[in-house]
Image (cartoon, rainbow over all chains, first blue to last red):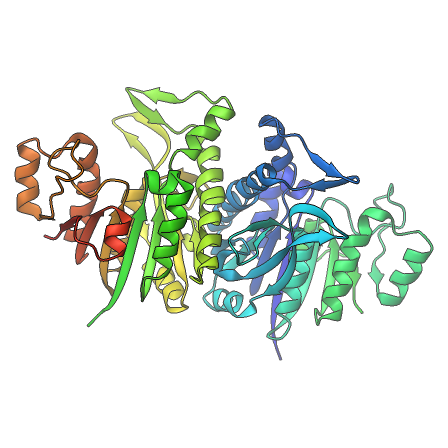
Length: 259
Length: 259
């Protein structure tokens, strides 16, 4: 039987609110066995860009990462957030190792170009090197990924953290039984986006199609769920979506997704 | 016989000038065998602090790292510089792994307090975990250290990069034959600070004392040389100081220091 590996992605207020982050990290450190953390960027990068008076660039309503904004996200995600998270995990006796996709060449990506529109330094993932990650895990290190990758040609790229979590999870299924959790401030996938008590407790590929077709699952949740089914279709055993306290403390009020 | 390990620290214009940095990294990637890079901060952190209108804080003529400035150096050293250096090394097929002292708990430090003066978030090193660094080296990874450490209580600390290089070098002498090189824009330790051709080619503990007592070695170079002799007294085989091109391309015009 394969060894169990927990991969947890945090985003939203879990990153933005330092009290919530500290509480989450204390909890995360107590998870027994192998684990990996993936963190999104939160509000800090937007705040720094505003302080530096960088104008957000948009093409056809979509945000474009220009060079100045790439520097900002590299500083905030790979520097400020990643190193403070690692330091807090060390305080809680979790031997964390902060990583961008460039470190150890763990995540190679390419610059996104869709239908001749250049979205700037946004990266789509080509390959995850599971062997390097496995070396870290076997050395009792806990990888902590930020949402920065590279193209192996010297270029850093801003990459969606949900996608990083799904791709890293999928890559490690050959060697581990992977459970992937997406943690944020909501209690899970909701039937009514305004009612935090309307959690859909269980979902599979069939019920997802129905919920999507009937318009019950709304816009913002769709890309996250696409990542979930990508991961499940690539060997991930189970996915949990919800509030980190419920998920880490074995509560019940969250969404579990299987194929 | 112990395996050879090259530890190279870069600072000054080698970091500030992107053309010099790119050229250095291309050279560094070609070094055969085990290697480690340590990089200083350069001018970028000062520039970002100025853009954010942070006032430099001074106590008795010495710069103090307050919380806002710690965030700036964490963003620039551990984020912008470290990840761009790692990405460029990956481009040159050197499997680099960017590290702060918090990552893998490789460098533990404490907040500097001298004679009741609180210098802010400046760190003095307590311990280097050579076993984790050895794991990376044995996995064919090239550690790239930035000048940020932690105190194992969740606090990041700004730490002198020359000292990091010396302490990491000293910690690895039990397992490797360590050669430590300090690379910057000058050709080495100079007899006349205004004459770049006045390189002192060889120095040992005795000649250093004479050069120091006669005032030939000036102020700015003393802390660097104290780090050198600390490293040599702790088992480092040889130290080189000078221009990276000379040192990496086996030139002769640089300073070699032995005990």
